[in-house]
Length: 376
Image (cartoon, rainbow, N blue to C red; front, side, top):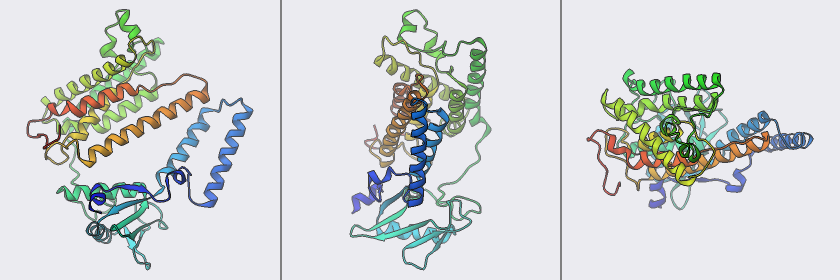
C-alpha cells in the first residue's frame, strides 16, 4: 500500500476501453453516436474528404468529454483525512448525507453541483473517485504539501486546492518572451506579404545548397498565423516563470536567450540526424520552447534543489510529453487525411529541445540550485 500511495497513481475507474467513450450517460452516448454517424455519412457523400471544421469540432467534443472521465487516486488513510479536512475548510465542497461523498458547491469553479468527490475504503487504504482533472489538482496539492509547500487555503473566488503563494510577476520577467514574440510576428507578416512562407525552413537540402542562415532563422520563422500565435502564446505564458528562476536581469535575459537558441539548435540537430537528406523544411520555435519546458521541469519550484530524475513528478511529465506529442501527431495526420493536404509535426525538434533543457538547462540556473542525490 505504501508504495502505491507514495506514487499517488491515478488510474481508470471503469477500464481503458470504457474510457474511450465520450460519456457514461446513456443519452450522451446516444447523442455522440448520432453525431459520428452523421459525420461519416457526410464524409461518404463528399468522398471522405470531410470539411476540416467538422473534424476539429468532433475532436474538441471528444477531448472535452474524455478529460472529464471518472478516475481513482490511491491514497493512504492519512492523505485521505488531509484531503477531507481541506475540502471542509475551503468551502468549495459540501459533505453529503451519504458517508464518504462530497458534493461540489453551487458557487464552485469546479463545475456543477451534481458532481461529487467520493472516498472509497479499500483493503489498500482509500481510493478518491472524481473526474480526472480534479484528481490531478488534488495530487499536485498533496505533493506540494508533502514537499513542504504551503497551501493557499480558502481564498474568495479562488480555485479549490490551490498551492503555494501567487507572487506578482515582475515586469522584467516578461521582457524576453515579449521581445522574441515581437520578432516572430513581423517576420511572418513579411513572409506572407512576400509569399515566401517556409523560406527560412531548415532541411538537409537547404544546408546542402549552402543556406546556413536557416540554422538560426528557422527558430523565429513560422508557417502560418495559427503557428506563430501558438508559439508566441507559449512564450508569453511560460517565459516569465522561467525568467524568474534564471535570476535577476539583465543576466537572466542573457541566460533565457542562450537557452532558447541552444534548445532550438538541439532540436534542429536531432531533426537533421533523423532526416539528413530531407527536403521538407522545418520552421518554428517549438524546439526552443520545449527546451524551456525541460528546464522548468527540473528547476526548483520554491527555491529548493533541482528535481531528481527519479522523482515521481519528473517521470509523470515525461510520460505526459510522450502522450501529448502522440496526440498532436495523430490529430495532424487526421487533419491532413481529411483535407487532402500534407501536414506534419516536427516531433524530433520537440524531443531534442526538451532533452537539452532537461539535462543541460540546469547549468544555466543560478548556482544556489544544485541537483539532489541521483538527480543526474
